[in-house]
Length: 85
Image 1 (cartoon, one colour):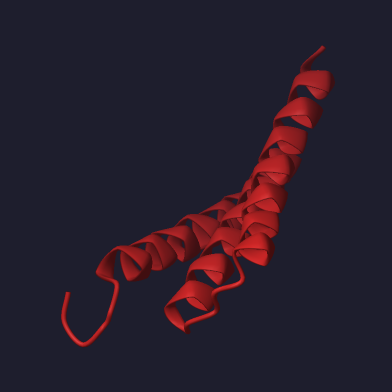
Image 2 (cartoon, rainbow, N blue to C red; image 1 turned 180 degrees about the vertical axis):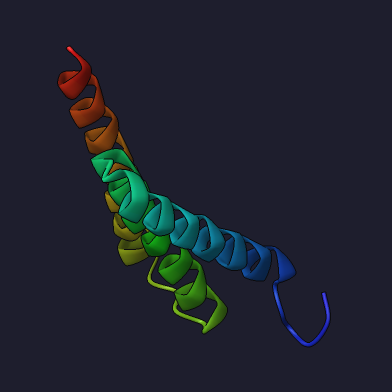
C-alpha cells in the first residue's frame, strides 16, 4: 500500500460501477426489473467504497449502505420469481 491508498477499495468501486452501468444498459433493452435493482445495488456499493476511500469512517452508516444494496438485490430476485410463477 502506497500513500495510504487502499487499492482493494478502488478496485471494488470501479467494478461495482461497471456492473451497475452494465445492468442499467441491459435493463433499458430488456425492461427487466431485476437488472434495475441489481444496478442500483451495485451503485450503492460503489458509493460506499467511494466514501471509504475518501476517509468516511462511520461504520454504522456504511453497514446501512451495504445492507440496502443487498436488500435491493433480494427484492429484485423476489419480484423476478413472483413474475415467473
